[in-house]
Amino acid sequence: MGSILPNWPPLVIESFVAKLWAWQRISLSDPFNYSRSGTNKMASEAVKEFTDDNFDSEVLKSDSPVLVDFWAPWCGPCRQIAPMIDELADENPNVAIGKINIDENPGVAQKFGINSIPTLLLFKNGEVSESFIGVRPKAALQEALSSV
Image 1 (cartoon, rainbow, N blue to C red):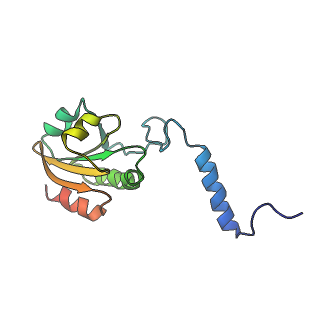
Image 2: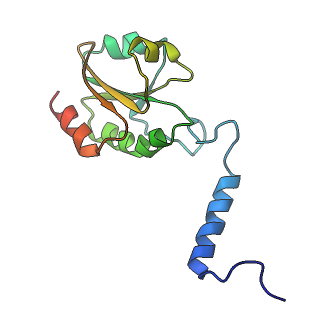
Image 3: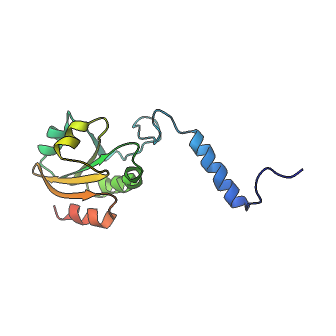
């Protein structure tokens, strides 16, 4: 009797099984594991969480520059840049870096005309000084952060 698996190299089968196992662990209520509870944190401790309620005080009235990542849990490119945002937050302590979920906080997204995500806005003195739409290289973001 033959195997039900195709005749693939062991490494390919191992990778496939690992992906299936990881997929089963994904929570349906939090499919991309953006929850800040538990051990699987999606964001670094240096990344702030902005909301419609705290945006004015944390971003617009901030004395330091603020980089805001407009994202949503279902957005693949948003998930792709998440580790880069974490790195930037850890590497740039003089700049406040945070995320705002546009599904849970539509007011700020509407106020700033966010039509596409990921969108990153760099605020200085309460005004947008630079904007980045889509996935951008880390070097481009770092250059903008270094210039403020």
